[in-house]
Length: 237
Ligand code: UDP
Image (cartoon, rainbow, N blue to C red; front, side):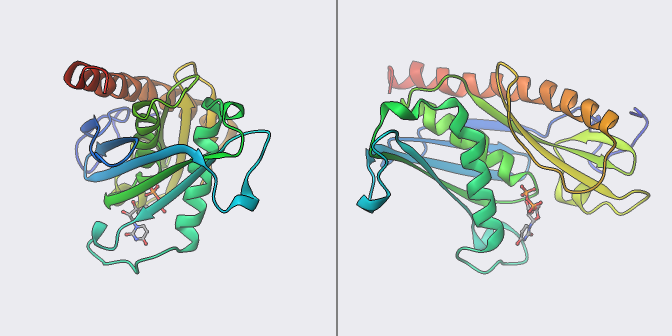
């Protein structure tokens, strides 16, 4: 890792964008949260646990988590086509994989927990922001969880590892170009999701995971504070 690498916005290589997190932003939901990292903003709303419909999808041995990620048309300057596309379907699925390990789903036979994630503004890192918001919203809904999940994208810009890429950094084309590694983990350090878009050596991947651990520890503190602030304000929701 070289400390001399200059990032477009002047951040240190292990420095996160400004983070804001708040729960209770969607009063109709059973639990909800907003998570902002720089210019990326995710809103998550949780409904359930409730009876699974359609009925033929019920599983009598356990409950199910359904995640629906959606990047809104106006979230980027080049308006995107509304509705489901392959990218949204993939991110919905990986969000489910990232969160499922901390839930105790066998407590809820035949039931479903629905998590809707809307990205209202996007500047890269939306899947991670969505997972951070969803983890908070599940906790806010009072869904029993073994741990929180925190998520961050680590990137390799040419040869240098950095955390929390902006869209400008994701589009970096010098040298070896960009590598994007979104990682989600529990507070206890169990990785629940990792993706890799680009190229990296096994050695540098270990450094990337270490950077993600440091970043997720900071994100966890912000998530914890958001929940604590809500308890103080709402008197336990
Ligand atoms: N993006 C866009 N239009 C799209 C999809 C993505 O402008 O249809 C932008 C948006 O800023 C997004 C970024 O590209 O955050 C990176 O998208 P990617 O698929 O890598 O996922 P993310 O980093 O958001 O998890």
